[in-house]
Image 1: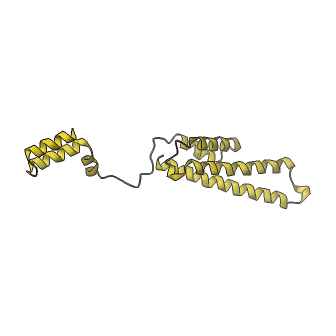
Image 2: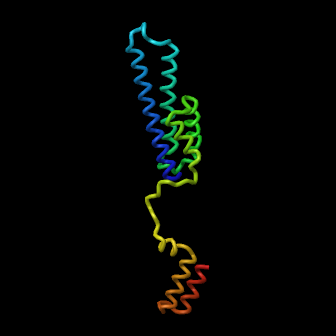
Image 3: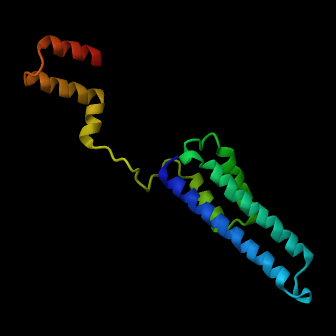
Length: 156
């Protein structure tokens, strides 16, 4: 999982728990209102359903990126379940929108990884770079013809 996708899923988790807090506030507000001003009982039943569903979305997303996202492909079902539940609850919630966007982020990288390799390091790690370095050492006289041929044979 790339860093961008991980960050967007973490933001979706934060908004999921913010939705959970809002649902708790809504339920408390319902029970604090005087009985004649309360909405229908169906309303509070739906609020409890929504509360448990938003908690489930947050927990499923946490499980999906557990261990720094290294097992994301194995735990893809958690991610997809959270996405489906979030879409069923509210298609246009911030959590749903972020999760839909992350579905299409497999190859996009907007956040650069922490470790940036040096160009010279990556050139020496490839075979061509190692052969070029070996030729330079041979041309400078650091190694003999036999050592050059031996190292070249190992590389090829």
